[in-house]
Length: 269
Image (cartoon, rainbow, N blue to C red; front, side, top):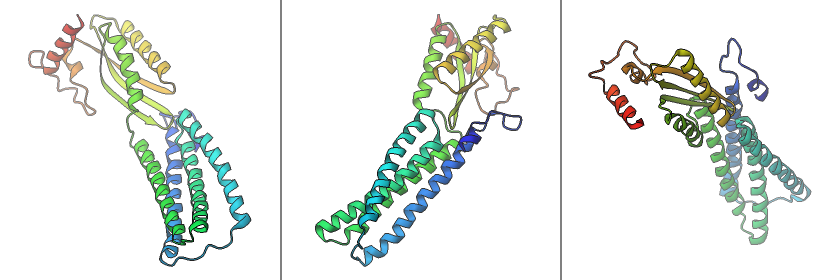
């Protein structure tokens, strides 16, 4: 999945291949839920009919050693996944953590039974571990679903965008129709830039290029789309919807958007 996601955009995939990571994370999330189901299926009979724990000895020691190694590896993978915004690495880390939690549950169950003699504690702890694993799987599947549905960028990222916008509003430039989405490691941002109608196309285009560059510097791995509009045209304020009708242009006298534009201009003076 990481290899496919790293491929550049091509003729058939104009926005790149980064979304392919969600297929990997979806499979990982499903496997985590299957692991939790297996734990539950094995724990319920022991809960109904408690049995003495068989000698584990060296096998448990190897399992604990493996859990420690997996735990360290998962920690590094999770950090790398968050830093690189790779849901595939995060999913692999959560899968390893599920194995760690399972082994930890077995170890705690064995120790408690050895200390108390209560055989029922072993399946109870196993069920608690299964619930934790289920929560991990559901959370991963939810994150995958949100990515496939083009969820908006995080509040922190949107705050960075608004900070950039604010620095240009002082120059009399307005913004609206902001849309953002996250595609695994890549961000996509689109918005309209409203400038004085007396500007030349060259000057307006240069300003859009400058704003796009500022955003890409603030948010790496970001693709920015801008649409240039004149502030004086009421139609510029009537096209913010996703499905807009270019012919439904209000008159200057009746346009509430135009009145809002006048208010914005007055506030800038």
